[in-house]
Amino acid sequence: MLTRTRVAAMLGASEKPLCEVYDLLMLDLDGVVYVGGHAVPGAPRHLEDVRRRGHRLAFITNNASRPPKAVAEHLTELGVPADARDVVTSAQAAARLLHDRLGAGVPVVALGAEGLVEALAAEGLVPVGVEDDAEALVTGYGPDVVWRDVMRAAVRVRDGLWWVASNSDMTIPTVYGTAPGHGVMVEMLRRFTDVEPDIAGKPARPLLDETVRRVGGTRPLMVGDRLDTDIAGGHTAGIDSLLVLTGITGLEELATATEELRPTYISADLGGLLVPQPAVDVRDGRCAVGGWEAVARADGITVTGQGAVDDWWRAVASAAWGWLDTTGSPADVSRLSVPR
Image (cartoon, rainbow, N blue to C red; front, side, top):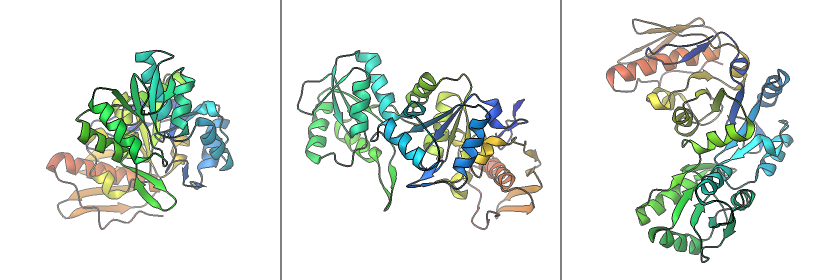
């Protein structure tokens, strides 16, 4: 049985493991399943356990550059067996948006990489260049996109060409660190053209809807590491979400999360899919769960007790959100240390 208490934390609770409650687990990739060229520790084993129980997985990504087959091959190399049918990209969601409005056989300017071009062709659209006649323009992350084409595309959008953007992520992880993502180009084109694109990727809804359409399921759960895309996307689509703490989100980000950025559940890693989710007991500003008690005051959050690290995160998040909702200011978490 699921319960959700709209008290400070707004965290959900489940008496059963999440993989038994939801019939489609939609997993973000970077920071959840892998980080760059390496699997997140424990992720292959946890996902194997989920699959062994007969549950459905979908791997979804805002990155429009790689075709699903390439993503599936990378996952398989990392110890997470996957087929192209298990992968859904923002390029596929963008192509679906275009097809639904324009139909098949229509020329569309493709400003991006191979994954974007392949997704358009799979929907029966005709990818063309920036100088060709077209009914729309679609943009996506592509490391080899040249500035000349960006300029020409910008002018065409300003002059009225319909624009679909695969995603609006401002950053992208690389082997040399966090780098500007496709969202940087989207923002530049917005400012130049004064046009708002239709966005396919998280936190917009099309990617999640496309995942359900392709993979199936009536009760999906969004699993991610980013509040502004994965968790916000769950809210946009009206579905529950699990935040895992193996990627970009840390204490400060969690403590400052407003309601639309708060997950239904929190777990240190994908192991959270295989266990129940206990309720947080919130009384008089004290948030207790699993042997931990967190209290937020003007000088910061204090935590006492001992127990599982997942419960530590639940108690701290509950206290932080309660303080933020009550005072309008984020609680100080700088003195906290995550237990091992």
